[in-house]
Length: 297
Image (cartoon, rainbow, N blue to C red; front, top):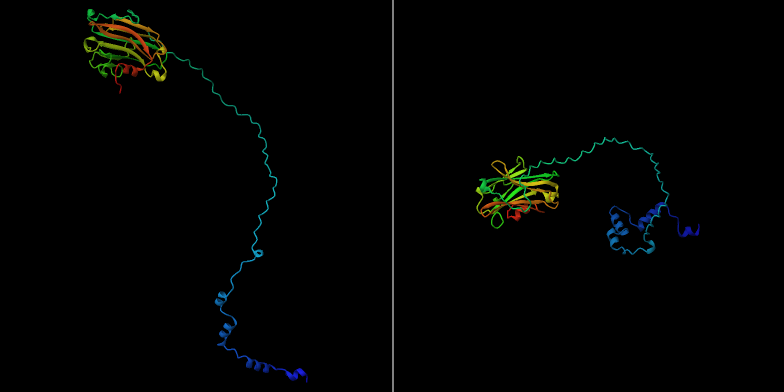
């Protein structure tokens, strides 16, 4: 028998089992939890007793992703547009041109005969008392070379101070009778453009003068003037039979004139006289009203 066998005899399976049971108690169901706790400590204890995390070495930090290299440039393709074919424009239809109509000038108005003409500044007594005439008619006439010229006649009844006693002392197309009824406006006379009749027997005793004026409507805004008129006149007739007492032909006026004072009927030593003034100014009807004290609304 070998020396090893004499010192350590061989163990059979049964002998190994008995030896294990002798050195280690048998495992039972109740001993398993104790074994687990002795072999594996609780997870909470491991977490509490775990060492603090240390910083990751620099060589272990995440590396940044390098930028993407630029894409290589490739030559772009250009679309070449073929040239447009030459197109002849379509012929346009042209209407036959109409002949220009010639500018029609207004037909000159027939000027009545001037039987008793007076010159500018020639003051004349009318001698109404001798003839027994109290109603006289002032006829106004003109011919407009420009159809835009709308001419108006008006009268201002003035007192001793050269101004109207009231706004009713202004007689024109918008106020055709004076306050005392002595002066009346009549448009479109038979032989004259416009007429103003004066009844001297009904004139207010405070009136010393009646001024007769011609104006062009909107002359300042439309740049109209008396240079566009011709054959301007004023004549005084006996209203009973139309007999001419005197006439005052002005002829052609100046281009810078927009209103014209034709004459004045005034009382001198109990007798009515007429003064052919013929004074043109650059003023409209509103300016004439302001000159003689008429308030316009």
